[in-house]
Length: 479
Length: 151
Image 1 (cartoon, rainbow over the protein chains, first blue to last red):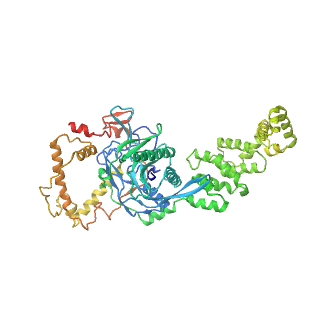
Image 2 (image 1 turned 90 degrees about the vertical axis):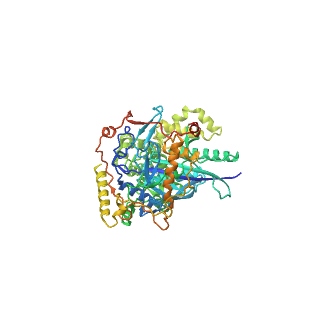
Image 3 (image 1 turned 135 degrees about the vertical axis):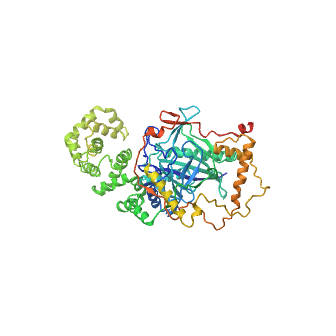
């Protein structure tokens, strides 16, 4: 039997505000339990919510970036449930009249090696709500420990159409949303700390049938790898159930990465069970055109625009253009280093960026904290082009600059000069090195003459090592 | 916190202002406005009967154990009483989201942190705190149908 997989995503992103969405306590991570709270977060008598303007602004920013409709009139509702993670007994959320409606997100799918196909998913809505507290069951037998530090952190819940058909598509869509919200500066994207959490809805139907299957939801996936594993496991689980003539019950499940299985959390409540109703403490939210226009003017140039520009200007493939625009920091670094560099050597620059610089840049989320300045980087490359230093020595210099965190563009030449790292291209010195290597490696020479062509590379490697990485490999192989 | 309180005061004033206008009786708590019902009382034959699965669902959602047939009967009575609302004709009536609808956008505050209360103040009325965590009964413990039937 042929089955079709239908996947929709619900993504919660924590907005990067300083204070919570309805109270003035701080938004921060990693503090002692219940230290970042005020009476509102505990729902003490007499407190009322007051909306954080920045949270609304960030939500609108996201809406504009995905070409959505910004509702001029939206309302907050209470989602009622008895669970100790929110002391009010309800969560303030949005349902039927959300702030953001529609829009769509494009995502790249790597079909073959370096061949890109673009997928697209419509966004149903994105709405504001408050995060809940964290519960701790481990250390408390028959009791629950509650930490309300997280309660009230502004969340934007993004709901996509169920229009994806594989784990690869779903993960790629989530990755695109992840890089977009970080690009806009509205979320730090830290999945480990729960700033970006994915819920996945999966259902299976027979191919060519219009009737959808019962969906199951996998909650709180906080890594893209787990997301892919969880979706693939869930697809197989549902297909097996259906092939054995079992029925699928609507459930909320979670993924356990240790046993690589999804586990039942609870039978799914339907929306009636939450008794949604408009929050009487919060009048409707009106958004003026003037405000939207202002927010639009603060949106940075988006990755797709930069991608098109660098493809046109530097004749790059889409694959590399996507790599170079995976974050605002990387795109900024690329565009600023290319203007100081020789465009004819762009291949070397990109190889260096992808292999050395991008992994370093990705280690740190801070937009201003670069491992090396674009000018230093272009000077370093220049020294490789003009033969002053070898590629290997350049890597060593790069690590020294990363450590020293100097902004001085002269540091590249300074390091070369003080450590005497010049590449050896003088034939007479190189010949001496080659002689030493040849005299001590008779086995490799025999292998070379018996037809093993790779033996020559091993010999060159030994010569480079002998010269402390300073020997010019091109000249060496000539000799 | 002052902001929160001042905001709430502001709203109270606003409501009071509205209540002094000629539409006052719709906003005042002293006037009971009876909904215009087409048939105010449901017929006696419309007796509400709750089946076991609905009772279990309600128990799970509210974390309240109905316990006896008597409390179930009270609930059924309450539902019957509230069901009157279905008799109100709301054709062509736009739902009112808030009494300040169309008149007042929810006020927004700037994104500024203010911690006027110390953590100790916030926790001073709490009986059970262990290592900074509030301690509550076990959460989300489902009431199984079988155990209910035994009762």
